[in-house]
Image (cartoon, rainbow, N blue to C red; front, side, top):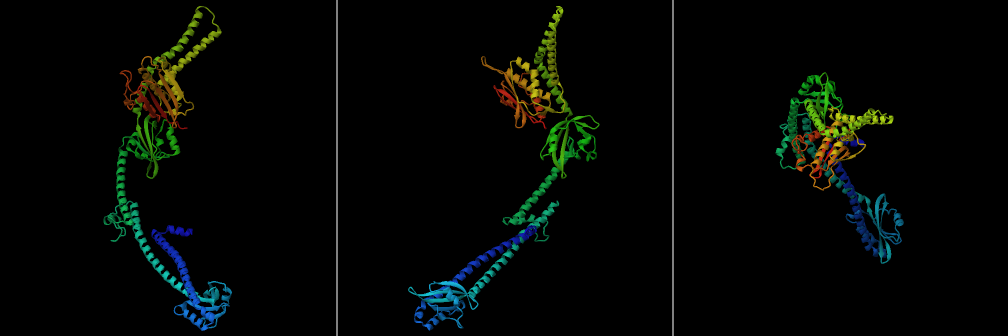
Length: 634
């Protein structure tokens, strides 16, 4: 069975259609033949039996007087009369028996056969019955009908119907019906053969055209596939068959449309390839095509040759890492390379590059996966951002210096406390020495310990300032978002207290680290806190109105990202300015109190760390800045 299924699956569509149609027709013919045979044979047999019963009933009605009078000639004449005409071919015999089952008349010419089965099967009490008997080696349907006079039984009439005659009639009917079915089968055979050719020939020719197209030969407009005048030309059918509903012709029309679309698409692809090849060659930035796994160079544009100092022939076939190395391995890039490049994944990051034998410089690297000549490749575009990085660093450093200047009041207050403590201790020692009084060892130890403690405190404040003003390197590090928050508050916390500003901390413990720079995050937090301070101090409050200037700092997890929120209940930002606040040099402060670069720098720093920054503000109510950062890879 599996062999037949396999052969059927492997045969052509034409043969599948032909043999399937033929099998269906044969199956239907067989079912119809069996059903008709059952219906006709049963009906014909029953009809002939009813006819025999009618003959037996007629004889039984007419032979009563002959049985009563024992008039044998009358009975004999009656039964022979019943066999006249066409009945002689159906009726094998007729017997009339008295109630003692003695034969009174019969139609046998020769000797009477042994009819003992009639006596055994039928008794005086039996009603009309039909039995299949064998008489003289012939199959006979014996029909027995009682002869009654009132309630008395006078005898029995037996009519024997030839089963052979019935079978002959059924055979003739079967032959006629089988001939009709054969004619229908042959007709359907011819129709299915023609129909399969009609459907599959154009499809075969379409397949030939497809094979031609698959080799890149799309110029088939004036070519007949079969090679003669009656051939199937799908590209000419549409003009000659408008309005035709034939599905095969509709297939040809669809093929025509597909071919035209394919030609257009191929031309567009050529144009696109030419355009992007031109962009690749003439692009001002170096572009490399690398193997996705090994970073072997497949191709490089002229800008790459110029920037790296090697010819295209020298670059191709070499490994990208042979010409230099990055300052550090970007964790995001390493993680993606380890798990496989998704089809639409794009990496965009800045890094310091150390070329072999040359001075290092900064690059912005943009990498995305692609297919190159049936190979998994990586398109790597790099841009020299050394000058931009240096200017950004100068701008950020200048902003830090400005910030340090703004923190001077708070820092001075912070440093005064340990200095005053040291001064008091020294004055006490000086007084004891001047008066010539002995200094108890316990008090001397206490003064020395306190002085040492205050020196450490002053040193910590100075170190915090130095760290804050330190020029940040390029490599990111794992940072807990709570650390820069606490670091800024160590510097600016006292200044906020001097200005009667309450700071509420809601720092969630156990937060995962992020990839960033600690002192740059401190600058972000400090700028946001100083903006919040200015908003609190500029808010107009009516006399006798209770108002407590408050800044709330919260850290938490949001949508699998680390979040930092800084809120104040200050004056708020007008709605029309919300979409401008991150633009460089935009400020609502008075002239001389700000250049409008703080939020712009904050925005750039947050974006460099893959973060997002959102602002929610209502005029007269307050402002909330929410920043979210991706978790550092494990």
